[in-house]
Amino acid sequence: MITSDSVSIRAVQPSDSSQWAELYRGYRDFYELSPDDSIVERVWTWILDDSNEVHAFVATSGDRLVGLAHYRRFSRPSTGSVGIYLDDLFTDSTARGAGVGRALLSELSALAEREGRSVVRWITAEDNTRARRLYDLTATPTKWVTYDLAPGAL
Image (tube, rainbow, N blue to C red; front, side, top):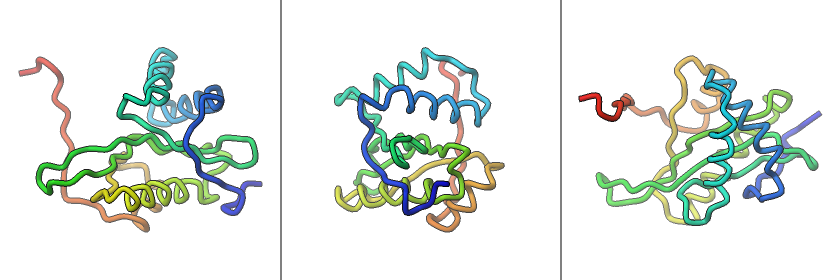
């Protein structure tokens, strides 16, 4: 059984490839995104490329990956500062409720503090009630609504 005491957070490593891919496929499945190994491979390439903006932390329990967080830094013209944007947060179904998500958020918060960043920000699905319980305990919801404009739509 996984407990919060048995979970560690670290930066992803090249040797994590297969376990990370399994977790990321789980994330994509959770959000009902089409299975597409080319996307999984592309994101893995981004994460390993130091010149790319996407980075990743993983949660481990023993030698097993049980969670992931993909993040990037973003400029905030309204405040003249830089924040950290959490793109993806996912916990393996066998580890949910064991503090994995909180541990990943804690690591991101600590990173933001070390780097002097102004905020850690993310979005989630309105109906993701289990995750939102954690988010409501650890962060402040904003008043902002997100829009997506398709390229060439106007």
